[in-house]
Length: 391
Image 1 (tube, rainbow, N blue to C red):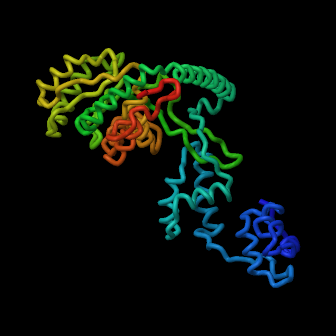
Image 2 (image 1 turned 90 degrees about the vertical axis):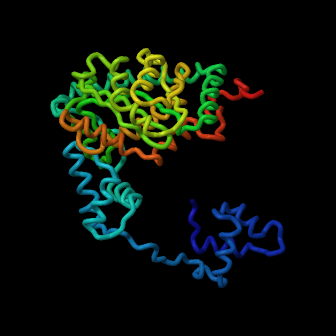
Image 3 (image 1 turned 180 degrees about the horizontal axis):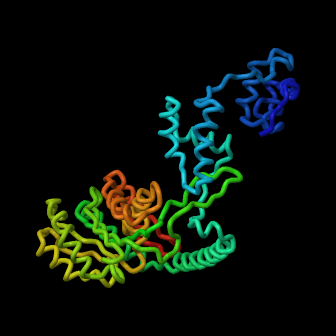
C-alpha cells in the first residue's frame, strides 16, 4: 500500500474542485491511486487547514500488549526452544493454559500464536519422526526422506486417478445411501468400522523456531512396529464402547470371529440399551462383514432392534462413512496428545480418546458426509456438469 507524505496529500487537495467531474474526490482518488478511494480523501479534507503540516500523520497509542517482551521470551519462546531441542512436539494450544497460570493474565491462543510467529519466527510444521538411533545416522535419514518422496508421488498419482474415475453411476449409488440415511434418521443407524494405532505413534505437528531441529523423537518409526486394532461403532448422537486387540490377540488381523466376539461382548447390549427401533448397521464391503451372521449375533445377544445391514458402495467410504477419514481423524489427534504411545499406555489412551467423543464432535462429520436431513445428496459430485444429476 502506497503511503502519501503530507506534501503529496496537500498537492492532491489543491486540485480538488467540488463541482468538477475531473477534479472531484472520486476522480482524484482514481487518478492518484489512493487506497480507500473517496472516503480517504474526505478524511484528509476534514483535517486540512490549507497547510501540509495539518496532514502530518499523528502517533496513536493502539492496543496495549497482553504480554511484555520479557514474558514472551520467558513463557513462549523458551518453552518452544526447549521442546525443539528435546525433539518433542509442542502446540500453541498447550502453551496457553501454562502462560495464563504463570503470568496471571487472560491471553488467547491466537495472541500467543501471533507472538510466537512475529517475535520468535515460529512456524507450524510437520516434524520428522525419528528414533534416537535414526537421528544419529544422517545417511539413514536421507534414505528415509527419499523413500517418503517416492511414496508421496505414488500416493498423489493414485489419488488423482481415483478422482477422475468417479462415474455418474457411482454418484447415484452414493446419493441413494444418503437419501436412505436422511429418511431413516442418523440416530437409528449404527456406523461400524475398524482402525489401528502402532507403538511409537506420536503427533507430527509441532512449532519449530528458526535454526532449531524439526525432528520428533519416538520409540519406533517402522511400519513393522506392534499394531493395536480397534473396532468402533457410533450413531450421530453417541459413541458405543470399542474393542481393542493387542498384536497377540489380533494375530494376522481382525477376522469375522473377532467382529462377532465384539458384538457378543459389548455392541449388542449397548445398542439394545439405546431403546430405538428400528436400528440399521452401516458397513463397508470388507469380507469379514457377513450380513447374516452379524444380524443373527445381534438378535441372539440382546438387540432385537437391528433389522437390516446397509453396505456402502465400492470406493465410497471416504464420501459416506462418518468414521472413515473424518471422525477417526478427530480420534487420532486425541490419542496422539502427549508422549509417544507405548505398550503400557496405548490401550488406555485409545479407549479414553474414543469415549471422549461427544455429539458435538459427531454432527460435523455426518454433515461432512451429506447424511443430515435436507442436505443436497450430490453436493460433492466431482463433475456435475458432465454427470447432470437430476436432469
